[in-house]
Every structure is written in C-alpha cells, then in structure tokens.
Length: 174
Image (cartoon, rainbow, N blue to C red; front, side, top):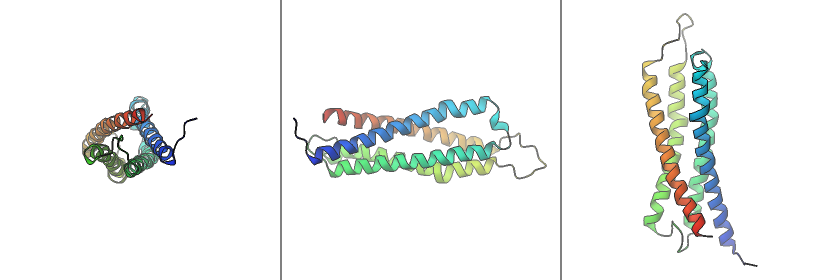
C-alpha cells in the first residue's frame, strides 16, 4: 500500500476541483452559445416581446454559475500555490503567473457579464412604449453583442489554456 500524505490528498482535491470547475464552465458556455441561443434565435423566440425577460432570466442564472466557477478556480489555484512543491507548475513565480492571470481574467469576464453586459443588454431590449412596434434591434445592441462574443472567445481561449496547464500538472503529479 502506498502511503499518501495529507498534503497530497489536499493537492489532488484542489486539482480535481479546478479541473472540474473549468470543464463544467467551458462546456456550459459552449452549450449555451452553440445550442440554446441559436435554437431560440432560429425558432423566432427572440422576436417575441417577452424574450427579454426570458433571456435575462437565463443569463442571470448562468452568470451566477460563472461567478461560482470562477471563484472556485481562483481559490483552487491560490490554494495550490500555497501548497506548492518543487514539481508543481506553480512552484516558482514565473510559472505561477500565467495560471493565476488566466483565472483572474476568467473571473473578471464573469463579473463583466454579471454586472455590466447582461443588465445593459436587457435594458436595451426592453420595450417600454406599448404603442410602438418593437421589431427593430436597438443601435447599441450590436455593439454589446460584439463585446459579448469578444469576451466569450477570450473566455474560451483562456479557459482552454488554463485547463491544459492544470491537466498537465495533474497528470505529471501522478
């Protein structure tokens, strides 16, 4: 029987937590971006007057999920940095900068989505005048969609790179 120390158990728990949160977050984002939203758009639901409320509800829930995943990833990497050993990817300052920077970037994107982008997009989409037809897309909505997709691509790239870093670390520590 191989003796494992408490240090190794805590380390593997944090590594598993970070990998699980990253995988869950990235797969959830891909499902939302590539399946749910295109199917809603294709079915014509986005042209319905109540879609803004439904869209806000979907993104409100998903944004909180993103904040939770971002906080778990950042906490996990900080805990791994605190428990570092000489074989760790975060054993020295130069190697630990990238994973921590990427996790901070992911968390910042989740904060931007939650507190800036989703409320602004929902406010632009609300139809406040009952006597006007709401078939036109507001001018600022295209800019916000562009910002959303730019941040989404950045999130997926940063998350993929971070997942690769963490997966290599987990495999090398076995």
